[in-house]
Length: 172
Image 1 (tube, rainbow, N blue to C red):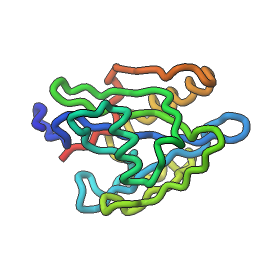
Image 2 (cartoon, rainbow, N blue to C red):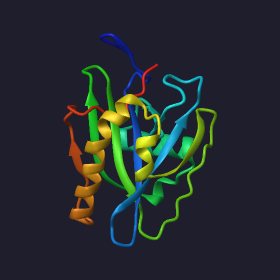
Image 3 (spheres, one colour):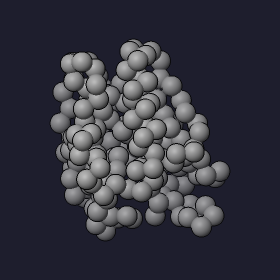
């Protein structure tokens, strides 16, 4: 999809999942990240598992499908807390913000050739990884959304349509 001076992957937009886990006190400790294959756009960087939406799916369904395909995460093990949209007019990237469902055990792994690695990354390690630039720009807002989810503890998912911070954009 052509969008100004960008080309984006996915005629119907794209989406990815920022999946978090918490310690017993409720603080986010780790997030699942994908180390992108070197042959891919912005290869060698880290971002959320995700990709192009199918014509008949919404962003949440697409992010959960892509995360199953790329990281082996069962959608039943995820509680969606919020979404963040980077809107470029004819194209949008939605970062779905979620956490591990109560009682679930998630062990992500690279399950297709689009990844060098997929794993839990401690929050303290995020600053030392080469993050996908759009994901790095969005990360403070996404982590704030997770903090808000903890405060709401069990409340309904929130939607953030503002694109001021960017999102984990995947371009082709």
